[in-house]
Amino acid sequence: MKILVPVKRVLDYNVKARVKADGTGVDLANVKMSMNPFDEIALEEAIRIKENGKAEEIIAVSIGVQQNQETLRTALAMGADRAILVVATDDVHNDIEPLTVASILAAITIKEGPDLILCGKQAIDNDFNATAQMLSAKLKWSQATFASEIDVEKDKIRVTREVDGGLQTIDAKIPAVVSVDLRLNEPRYASLPNIMKAKRKPLEEISPADLGVEISQRLKVIKTKEPDSREAGLILENIDQLVEKIQENVGG
Image 1 (cartoon, rainbow, N blue to C red):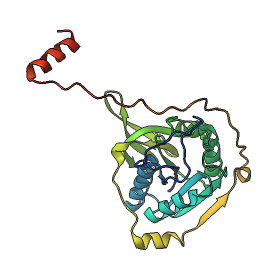
Image 2 (image 1 turned 90 degrees about the horizontal axis):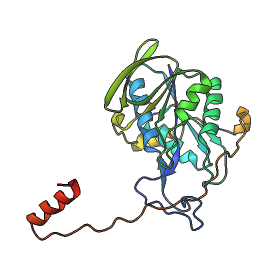
Image 3 (image 1 turned 60 degrees about the vertical axis):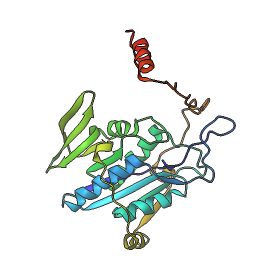
């Protein structure tokens, strides 16, 4: 079995996002970037599947700017076997839209022939939560979303997924597209020897044109606004005041 894992380079989750002065988006100049955490979880699961002898190869794919090489080298150091970089823009502020990403991944899938695609349920720098679904539709493959547990069998995968009010277990025929949720998270870190090995692993660089995909903007950001600052709460002098306030809020 061959597994394809898309990984996105995003603003590091420990960095406070700053809105650009013109309000057209988040300022990404001179800030720390890292792998999207949900994609990292998908990669961890792919590595576990390979370690259990159910996969032979893991391919990491990233779409964006030239600097995405760093993200792919991290993926290789974690355990991916090879990587593909699709240089789709030279501006880090130019976010590739989900439909275009799905089209590029579909073209790579046809070229590489994986049996399973594991991806994060969303990117933390936007909340489209759409790429996996679009990719599944383009490929006409089985789909499982919000996976919290994955069990690979001979010709199917059993996926436990998050639903409103609990968990749902489904069987999906292989080939399949699976988007993973936080419950799959079992962190693994790249060791120094693996980082050195990653430098020798193959990293192929291609363009969307090589795949027959045209990059086009269908969406326009009108305005980006930071969340309102939190206001200080009330300071009460005693428990009686607390009870009174609670009763006021619950209508008692």
